[in-house]
Amino acid sequence: EVQLVESGGGLVQPGGSLRLSCVASELTFTNFAMSWVRQAPGKGLEWVSGIGRSDGRTYYAHSVKGRFTISRDNSKNTLYLQLNALRAEDTAVYHCAKHGYSDNSGYLNSWGQGTLVTVSS
Amino acid sequence: QSVLTQSPSVSAAPGQKVTISCSGSSSNIENNYVSWYQQFPGTAPKLLIYESYKRPSGIPDRFSGSKSGTSGTLGITGLQTGDEADYYCGTWDSRLSAWVFGGGTKLTVL
Image (tube, rainbow over all chains, first blue to last red; front, side, top):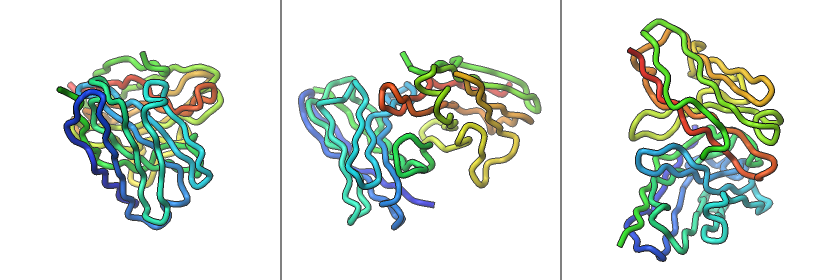
């Protein structure tokens, strides 16, 4: 089973930026679509963004479109999420997750433990 | 407000059966597979059901999934105290071009 390990979270002021990373242990990382899912304290799961296997097709939730950018480096088995213009409501644990298919319509069958992003002055 | 609607909570006694429903629309559940996730406090979600009714390896057959029209259902039989968790449905929304989750259902085993 693939292991996903996120990093890059932390405390940032409103309007600031962060770059999250997610390293996958399995070499078949390149065969699957990936997503970021966040969970604000005491709240439910919110899908943030997804990226296809290798065609560069990306998708974003309305709440983050234009502020967040997802990317992947298949040579490094790594998924990224660039967070810009951060707001207090972006405070959450950010999980990376692997889809069961090469496109983002499939189920999420592996999840990382998450990295906490706190937006506060 | 979530695109998919779940009841906030459900409860039942040990050994009993419970169902958790997930209501959507033609742009999501009706034309895409539903998946279900179990989450314990402070941990990552775990896939329970995929492609509406299939179980990943290691998930006991006490857990089942079904889909009809614009709704999906998770069933849990032989409830155990260890099943107390939050349960989320999820699917792809073709109109939004986005993955969507239900708001989650907290299961209490009394």
